[in-house]
Length: 450
Image (tube, rainbow, N blue to C red; front, side, top):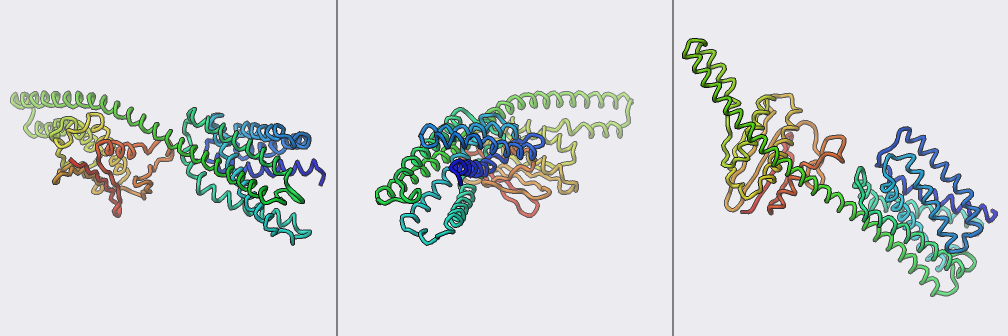
């Protein structure tokens, strides 16, 4: 092989490895139409770009800045091409591509640690004419192991939180830090130790060179692992901040909804009382038969009902939900000692029980059998504990994650906050929330220590 062909192969090999990690990091992002065609064309384009880069690499790859420029250019070109395939912001794509770059560097450095150790122990001296074949087999075996290891240690955890999430400035800085540290360390190490190698690269006459090479390799791996861990932590932190903001918004909306519902229930009760008096007047004047009056009174009695729990907010909320249940053939059974819940703020209380009942309503609405369209809600005190229990039937299966049921809606990035909001409110007041399933019945239990 000519020197240009060697450099071309190095570039192609790097792009292939980088592409593997980029696919793993970006595969959950929103894709553009004709994604497969776009991906194939982009893949061919990046390799076409690599051809002239190989000439530059041949001419200037022996210098530090020349090598850095080569890999920065390939990174920039790859990131721009991902925009052709994914309908995401440049920030999101930059973040994903930077982490892919760091993961590729980890795989390369792990390989160097293993390979350099073998060189030092002279394990490869007997390979003879099949050296290149065995070299490639070892190289790609280690690469495959690193890909699998990276997936289970970092990638699946990060990609699960990256989908449809806004990345903040902190994460952008981490992205640039990832890129800078991997390019700089890799370039400096490769150039420095290539000059110290004998016979083959990464084979040294002096033991001290071997120790230095392995130390630098290990340092690069540790740095990239730390940065990937920080990136994962930053994404999770960002998601938690979004959930907190969502919860605050929900609580504010709950307070407004409570006032609206309270006014509506009071207005309905007033109107119902007026209608009853008018019915009695018509009956006294002989304008209606007693049977007709009774039928009309029974019809409006549901709207004149008022739940008494000892807590005005819960009275309004449960009355409102009961009206909905009556209209939709759902049996809402409540045994609630609302006076015991006065330690909770209005917005928190409305959000907690509003979400709790709404989740149950969503489940039982899907059930066709009338006898299974049942929701049981109980609040009671026992010793120094306050217990909140909710049970309802459901159809299908529930998947649990971190002790909470995962939303069954397709857009999981926009839904599923309800149960997490419940847990956050419960923890705010020092309580514990647990959820479980027995046959086709969902159980939710909340315990407060008072």
